[in-house]
Picture 1 (cartoon, rainbow, N blue to C red):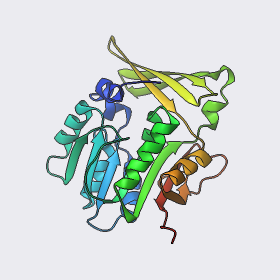
Picture 2: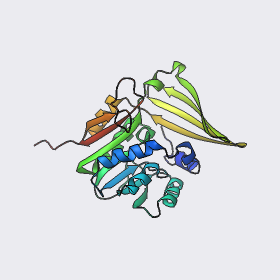
Picture 3: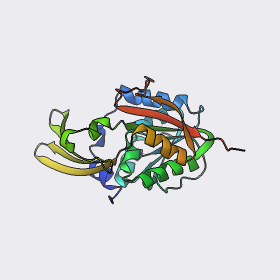
Length: 249
């Protein structure tokens, strides 16, 4: 399945912060990442967007290199982080070369699932490992897909009220065989209608762990939120920490 990786960001860059506003959870995410990164260390974020988490990380004294496929997203990032230690790289997460090693690699907010094939997701994890110090940590945040996978008829619709004048409609169609959730987003505000497609290739936690293992990484921690509540059968997402597999001698 082919989809321009920049399409999502290019279509939503100017309203992205309205859909995903800064909230107390951003501070929790930044604290979680900072606790697993040496003081003054480096963080590489795949899918940095407009810098929702990157800004908070930089404010904590970390150096951030943010990668995104959308130039419009990176333009908004630059506006928000002009006085912070944040660098931006335009590129494809599967192959982008940011040079050097980083203390932490972050793939948050379901970004891994936006790569629409298992092979591509493995390539993202392999690329993360290439950029990761041998004692570093890869942190991945994705949804737990049981709800989508078990939808009656494989369809659902959600409405999100963004502010007093705008709302976001999301229609979801699920292909259970290929683990694909096709999400159509319609943004409505004062007579404006904007549509943006999103393809999410979901994977259950055990498959994410296996793909990570193929990439030379092993699971060391898993929680249901950034505050460290443990992941269990009712959790709707997971924040997982992977570390490089030691060389076997």
